Image (cartoon, rainbow, N blue to C red):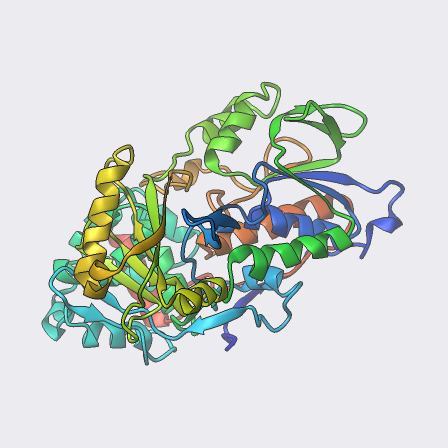
Length: 511
């Protein structure tokens, strides 16, 4: 389905190819995650010379995949965990269609149930797709939300949630944390685990550390701003084989230089072109443009090592970026299958320390092949906002205990292989941070930023924000050389209901 009310953001106009220019521009893209790959694709398709530097030995960044060796010597596919490719991710899907026009390497997950500590379950199966009936139906059939709760909601205070306008929602709610906002609107405490914390945890943050504006924007993107529904897709095989190796070959065909296991150390102004990138091999690359598409820590490291880059205001914005609390992904290769009716993905609330369980062998081809051969299963347990990430032994035991509680058949299974990945490299969208967040455009000529932590005033989030900022970085460079860009798409930039928008305007005037 394609939402008929999705919004097109037209491409900048210009020449179709760089061969019309006196000299072909050369751009260095730092980082081969989603943002960097989108930027590289957007530039290379217009004939720009592109070189990509990637620290890891694989593409895809935080959505990358690799091969792991288990204790018995067998090789298995692995990654950083479950990722949902929602139908609203128009710009990410545009990137993936470069090598998979019909998106056949994605498969639908029709439902992902949610369960809380008292055993109450919610489901997204069978919801209407049209706003606001989708959200209303979800609320009214939830075991944690009753009609009396709907009556008790502070409708005026809640109006911004139902009538999001981007970027205005950040002016309204960014100074407030999501937990306080939900309290102010009288949203029932019991329902928060299942109705809202699932969104907060997508940012690896607890609601009291997440901007209320970011929560409202997420609600708009997935519920009230889109008719795509809450069905999503997953990669049918490990991310490297399903997504990034084909895209890497496509980029090589576009004459892009992909250099893995190489990092950018600093960027300086000058050289034979506009900028110079100094990499970890000791090489200096002259470039007409640079796109820094790294995680927060790497961006801060590069800018700190580049004293002549930008003014103090911009450098301060980069320096003040925050990283979300650590998260953990425990993957288990078990010697027996889980029960046949276990969903591919189960979200949890109030069941610390875990946040969801995925049965990887239910959807990922390499895991399914291993499970068939071993008469077993591959299961993944996630824990977000880890309190004590250094105590991995205790964390591992706690995650395993919760798995055994929820899926008792795993308690008697033998563990053939196990990995526990703990990372803290995702951006944090804390209250009050939006205005200070650096944007795609920078004060340095030829320098752009991209990534899921970079501000862009469009209704996008997570992987889609990464893709959108990557395409936008390419567009901004292209227009500077008189070249045409790429049209982007998003859900509507404001709430779809005139009545709810009117209520929101009343709330703004009252405040």
